[in-house]
Amino acid sequence: MLNDPHISLSPIDDEVFVFEDEQEQISDKTHLTLLEVESQGQDTSEAWKMMIVDDDVEVHQATKLALRSFTFEGKPLTFLSAFSGTEAKKLIAVHPDTAFILLDVVMETNDAGLRVVKYIREELKNQIVRVILRTGQPGDAPEESVILNYDINDYKLKVELTRQKLITSAIAALRSYRDLITIEQQTAQLTQALHDLQQTQYSLMQNEKMSALGNLVTAIAHEINNPINFIAGNLKPAQDYIHDLFALINLYRQTFPDPGAAIEEAIATIDLEYLQQDLPKLISSLKEGSDRIRGISASLRTFSRGDSDRKVPFNIHDGIESTLLILKHRLKAHEHHPAIEVVKDYGEIPQLECFPGQLNQVFMNLIANAIDALEESNKERSLQQITDNPNRITIVTRLSEDRHHVLIRIQDNGMGMSENVKQKLFGYLFTTKGVGKGTGLGLTISRQIVEEKHGGQLTVTSELGKGTELAIAIPVAS
Image (tube, helix red, strand yellow):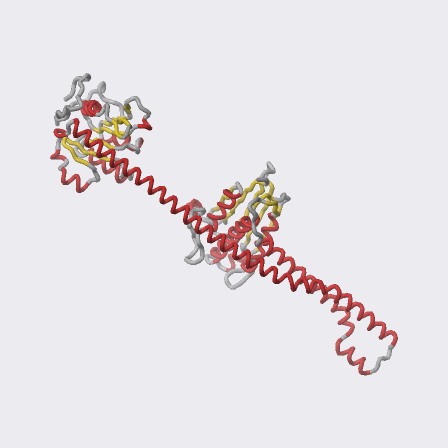
């Protein structure tokens, strides 16, 4: 053993420095603390971490002495010391970035070192740290058995571990550790790049879909607008003409009170009195219908409006109304569910500086999801239960107390969701819908639009059996 604290080894010294197998009693005075970390005057972040696990204090001292001036790629070693398997487990948990471990087998038990290896690989899932098993009692850990059954990287007997071989083992371990770290970093970068690429791809697909929908809606609105403007523009003159004709008929009847049997029969056939009362009402109904169609056309244009490269003032309520109009067919009663009631509680809010087309896309995603949730909840309820608690979507808008944010809350009274689902809700490609019914992109893209494009926040509040609320908060001004 190396008992002299002043002993030194020359660079060419190749004597065996650890060779005794006997276990010696370690006193409290010589026992090093669990988290002892010794570095060679360097910032530990700029050094390789090496752990020595052995119940012999002199093995720690000799190992540190042998490697005291060792550097690899310009970085020295930082030594971590543990004197039992239990201490080693705690220490590696605190220092998962340890590069390599010199690990004794026989310590507090005959297989303490092997238990440490199993803990590192199986419980901590640390496959990066290099483990060099060194033992003075190979009978308790035969090399072939250990190599086959444990994920170790090198096996050395203490009697063969000279200074030079120790340095060689350290270099090999550090090279392997460095390469694994590089591979791990590159894998993480490639995984992130792939994720970003997929997200960009799906975002582009979604944007293209919304753009195509917008173009289609705009074209339909334009085609509707032309004839309806023609009809609406001619209703007033038609109304005036009818008024004039009725005035002329009344004048004829006053001038010729006895028009003859044929005319009297014709008047009776067409029920002239009723016609004079009902035709103006009919013209008014036509005018109301044309006005409604023009309103729908205007709402379609509002929904499908394109965004410029800068934010513009926008009335949020117009965006919500246009979205509800697009989704109106899904709100009506049909064979799958009764009518869905929409409760609107609009507050006094200013126009918002935003990208209107993108926010309309958010409203579309959130309201469509609320409808989906209600349709899904109806599958688990009887007709009587649905009647007692009708499907409802509540939309609330408010100005925040500091008047700096517009708040939009979209709530349904469906079945809600579990905490596990809620945690994954905005995850990339996550969906609870069946195959072909959901892409897992709607909420992801909605959060990007709200948070990245508008500097706002999109949050979810939900509880099983109590419905779901999605809340948007967006700054009033850029």
